[in-house]
Length: 321
Image (cartoon, rainbow, N blue to C red):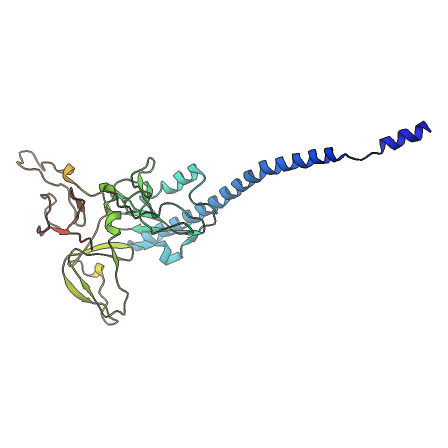
């Protein structure tokens, strides 16, 4: 009898307390490993996005070498659809390695569900990375990781520099690219953000088929992602038979450079023995920012010039409205 009773005791199952402990342990393990898995999955998505952007960069640069002109990756190949589920780069090294390749980054950073595309500007020999769309993106403006002078957000390369940083502007360490933020309408007064601030004033050049466009001297227009300022006041025909564009009328429009704007701080004597200070090393399309944060675009003349005024024929005053 004692033997049978002993056998019954050995056949007992788990108690409720033991089962609860096992469930609790499993829940803790799940709570630990799900965030880790989710994080690794997001990093994998970001790596895929970065690889796709690099692929378009290679295609754009190949086309630029072949054609010798401006190249828009968005127009030629379509924007890269981002797979990541979170805004911004979660991996800092990936961000630095990717965005450090560009003179300017526009749009403030990648957005969940957004797109990205690469652009080459031949005049400044610079490459721009654009971020667009996404659930939380606003208007695109220039961005911040990259070469300082230009920008963007706007373009700088070989010595040019670009626009403003993400919401605040400013240059970052690393490749020197200046990042323009696309989620803020705040205008920075930093001369490095001049191109971005002028870009906010730009009107889209009408498409072919419109009847005509009335243009004032000093108005800013954007055509094929390039900024121009009108050097004259007149009406342009843009109908089906005669489609005028800013780049086809070089005497009446000036293409704006993406370099950092000059200011009074840049005044210097252009040569020994000079009795006055001037702005030096000017190029057509350079920006100047005065103490009231008004902008002027250099129309041409001597590479050394006095401070501009609205009546100075060598400069075009940028209209704000």
